[in-house]
Length: 124
Image (cartoon, rainbow, N blue to C red; front, top):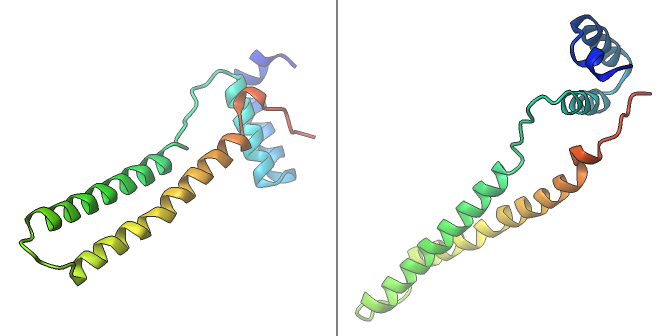
């Protein structure tokens, strides 16, 4: 079957979609749709970087806020000791680490999971 026939024939697309929904798992249907859209040269929506960006931004801002807070405490405190509020600021910084690390791990996993340049047809 020619690619132009697959990409430009709405009746064939509808019949293929009906068959996929009836006989294939959701995962296989989505992979097939992904492959078809990529093969037909349609634009790719790539939002897999958003969670990583949010996690890194959040972790960076938490670290910056903590460093600024501790810097102000040690340079301008006039002998004030570390208080409960400083402890909770440090705790917030520590708690910001796992989401950042999880996003980094997930990002590396997702990039290995599906690479459109290496996609293979999975329809049986």
